[in-house]
Image (cartoon, rainbow, N blue to C red; front, side, top):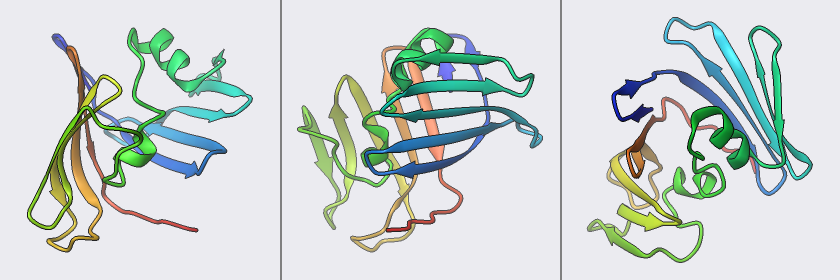
Amino acid sequence: VTRANERVQASIVWQHSAGASDAIDVFSPVGGQMARLSSSPDGAQLVTAERERVVAPTAEELSARLFGSPLPLTGMPDWVLGRAAGQPVSAQRDAVGRFEYLAEAGWVIRYLEYENGDAAALPRTMDFERGDLRVRLRVDAWRIVE
């Protein structure tokens, strides 16, 4: 995550249940768990490694409170799968129909790398940008359970 002159690097393990809940475990670059962000229709909470707890009605409100700007947690479940969450303002696709670029909900998503050249391949590296906030996401492993 980059914002102005600040840069933070972390690893995450994200468990998403369509329409129900998210659990995002955040790890330092050396592997220690720093926090867990969880959200559901009932609200969102962040629990730090020191057991501090911060709550908010939504994950976006919680991320705005913690980071000074809301992270794109509503659209991200679709965007990381290489699809639009709603109606894009603009978009560009590659030769096999995958998104290269997508602008939606005030965010610009650039797909920098896919698993392979197949039309059904999942994204591997993405940039999410809004104003001076940039989030680069690199997926090491996908596990999709239906």
